Image 1 (tube, helix red, strand yellow):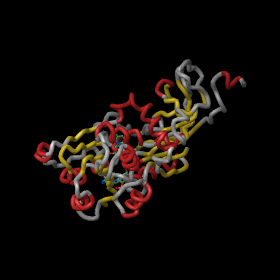
Image 2 (cartoon, helix red, strand yellow):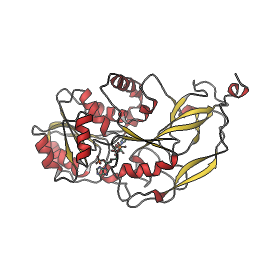
Image 3 (tube, helix red, strand yellow):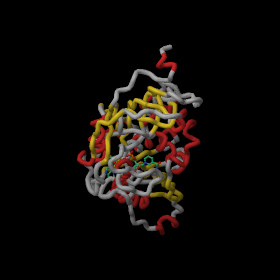
Image 4 (spheres, protein in one colour):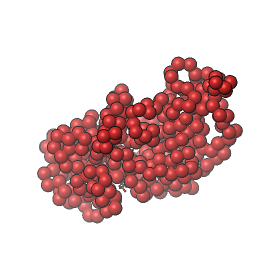
Length: 348
Ligand SMILES: NC(=O)c1ccc[n+]([C@@H]2O[C@H](COP(=O)([O-])OP(=O)(O)OC[C@H]3O[C@@H](n4cnc5c(N)ncnc54)[C@H](OP(=O)(O)O)[C@@H]3O)[C@@H](O)[C@H]2O)c1
């Protein structure tokens, strides 16, 4: 073993690296002009810290919301500071880390993304279980959020008719498949184009799709779900939530997972919708807000089940990959514009 390896250091890191900052808060459409890519010194890890070379970062819709200071269970982005989000990296120095089982060469998941190198507290980094999922990048899928929505809030049962709004996005592309794994009989998604609708039906096992912008969602849903909806996995809110309520059966369960209709435009901090509460009580409909953070203890078991389904070919992880940190701002802009299907990953 070399002296460096014995000291918990792999190949020496460069003296500088790149990170992405938010320069101004968007008040309308997000563009690459809201970001800047800076060259800065690579930080040095202190006691109990790891130096990680980031490899794969996830680009997700909530990043737009975090730019505006919305009231969420995680801190908003600060101006002129590196942004953050889920990322997988390789530990290249762990000079004074004892216990915890993380060492040089390990792959860890943490939240100091939007930069090429990161110093993270060892006790906040998650050692990747490389046996759990077929591809390390699948740890960046939003399958866990989808699993939480389907099982804990939607409580999907055998034969249910399920509507997933925002079905072609990072969460939605997993939610329809996971609803099917839990016995859903008919799965309907919403998206913005025929191309994406065809993908939902052809590749992700949806039975049918409504298309945003192709006429009232309620009319489309009534036609595609003549026997009504038992479960709604709602990523969107707005008109789609109203339409789903109108078509919902007695005792329908609504998993309120996202609010894309209000998150991606304007200041992105509110998602108001007018609801006829008489409909809720008359049909005993339950609206259940849910966040993955409330179910963290179940993550290891859910990850095993997701890995098993992936290994058996019952669950796929649709995603697109970009290469290079400089592509990250554009990737987020394109995600919001609806250009992609599934998750968006940037390889660093
Ligand atoms: N509760 C939790 O614990 C939790 C965890 C993670 C994420 N979330 C939430 O889950 C939701 C989905 O997240 P994601 O990362 O998977 O996002 P996403 O669905 O990948 O977001 C991008 C997609 O949003 C759709 N979109 C864009 N503008 C829209 C509009 N005005 N109305 C409706 N849809 C629009 C587009 O899809 P189409 O082109 O197909 O319409 C676009 O491709 C978000 O609200 C996110 O904040 C919640």
